[in-house]
Image 1: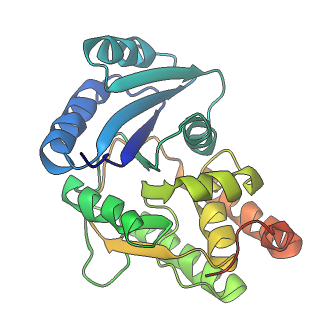
Image 2 (image 1 turned 60 degrees about the vertical axis):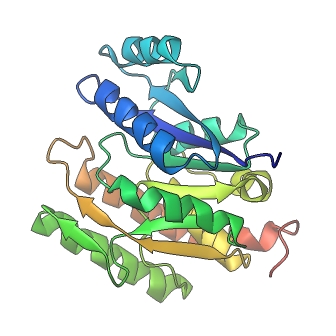
Length: 248
């Protein structure tokens, strides 16, 4: 009998009591029907929530052995994802935003690309074939301006740094993750910049994405953190210090 590859999907959450149960059960049902060729489980990482989010997460973990729940005392999406990935021994690890803004139909091709020679797979709202609904003008302009700035500063090829729909192999966790400093929203950009500069193969899945009007993301605060992160990386060039991940 052929052993199935293992897959862990992390969901970082902060004060998401309204959506968490429905989203996790929706994801679990989808995985059961569409990724049965993987031995999968789900990890909920609570980032210092002040509502009932962690209580709901623990309830879900008691209901099924395929759901795990952890609590961190500090906020930060990057911190949550790094914690989950570091403490996983799965072949492939991923993370999704709890609101499931990205259509789950894109999850199977995203994950399966990592069994075909890619080491990072990302959902892209900017790639040809993608569709975006409900995004306001401010977020659209800032997102496209941000990607333009990244390409001008670093000459990279990926088209979307911030979509909360990513998966990586165990090799990336081992060799790239320890070099990522950011614990907040810039985590995604730092991961992709370091990885592409080290020759890691990145797969892009054009996605259908529907904006969540109740998102807790603060645009200007996040944008400022991103700009500081880009400036830091422009001067420090952290990928030059990595020798263990050989170029393909």
